[in-house]
Image 1: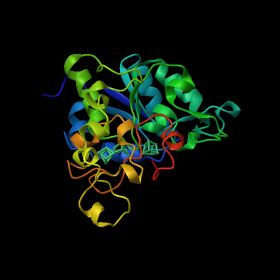
Image 2 (image 1 turned 135 degrees about the vertical axis):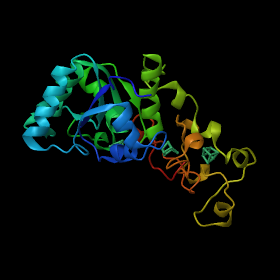
Image 3 (image 1 turned 120 degrees about the horizontal axis):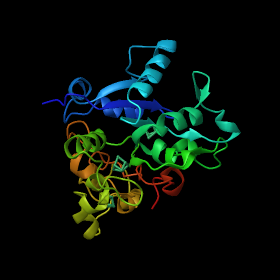
Length: 266
Ligand code: SF4
Ligand code: SF4
Ligand code: F3S
């Protein structure tokens, strides 16, 4: 049964591509309509809210004051910190100002995706805008759900953990929930036996690729990447990058855009 007061959620969009919202809309356990109508109360979300312009701003401020210290803040996107944050604004205010104000009275701040967690591709060297993840930009502690995009089940699992247990889940030293990020892709990869047998794909479209051999030689970053993709997959368990024949690019690791590239080289 739904709780009497569904926990209010304020979802902020900063420097991002909205892929994380798109992923969240495709949650299947439960479906997004159940999440929005029965489980949480989404007070502000620029992509899905009906309000626009001043009315949207009014909604944000009304929710912040009505649920002061009682709402969850979810952030999608990173924060440009150079030039007083001038590279990113909503309603005339910088992401820096909005982020400080909204997270200050949140019960907890959850970073949805690698942009909010680590800065994202827009933080790639030389990073002229000084883009940073929310924790680094604002100097606050956050629960981090990295991935580009992350699996929506990892966000929903975090929120459901809070609803059922009254607390946020246990996290690792990067603030990532252990229920989702305790193992590497390589630990649980169905191609692992090929890795152990030295059976590698060396060319896309080859016989070895068709036989589902290990993608390590094609640049797979699964051995250094912590995420649960092989277990939960995407789109109702349909598939995930390695099952589709593409090496893992390490999309949930810190600075993967610089640290894991070139993506197709070991
Ligand atoms: Fe888009 Fe990836 Fe950033 Fe999510 S983490 S907003 S999918 S670039
Ligand atoms: Fe490991 Fe990648 Fe090979 Fe899977 S495809 S066994 S994750 S190196
Ligand atoms: Fe990302 Fe690798 Fe999973 S690229 S989606 S962590 S398989």
